Length: 282
Image 1 (cartoon, helix red, strand yellow):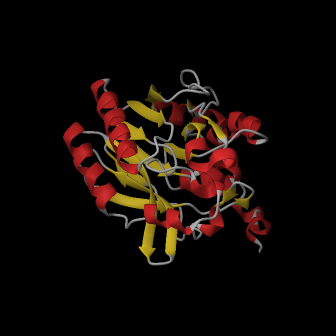
Image 2 (image 1 turned 90 degrees about the vertical axis):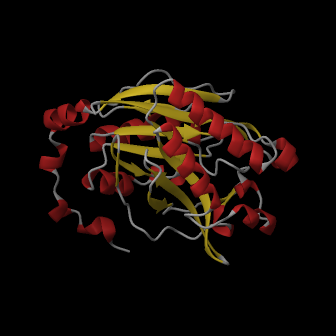
């Protein structure tokens, strides 16, 4: 499959888990009706972004992976013949929690999961209260539409993960986010295109949108959406999503561009891993 019709979503927090699950099921049905063969949701898609505060009540959003939500979307993937990148708050065992994305193939099979490596602990991003650092490496997944990988939000600031996924064979890397305004706005515009160019691959970046003040009051931040797809040449595929409104975006990804750009630039040929030992020094 050369052209992969890809869907990405950005959503506002409704106030309850079940309506968020239903909203994303409908996004997926709408995407499939438009011919999409793969879809990715935003980080922690079925809950609020609870890193705003440090409160143990939000541990209740965690569940096993695979588990009830994974199985629910496995059935949907099979019904609609669509691959799903499914961000889930994962409980490995009581007290051992991860920020995770499951990958479900278009026949409904569970292919595996990625656990977010880099965990911020900054004002309104108190993630170390909720998550351990990922320990599953940078897996790639052979899906019905091609070989894909996942980076989650804060991971995007670290170039090593992108390179590991590319070397593993990923042609598309999905990057679900909960990214708030401030110094990140400019980084949002440049980091994923830079990663796409440096690694000769497509990047699909999703971000939640809207103010979650019903959950967090004056502590809430206003997520700015602006989800997008960028190709291995650094060019956007279509326009960025809205900065204020929920949205389902459909974009056609031409996987032939991966070979075209890599053969043009030859970054992989000219890499010097023998010279990079200092990069992994503690």
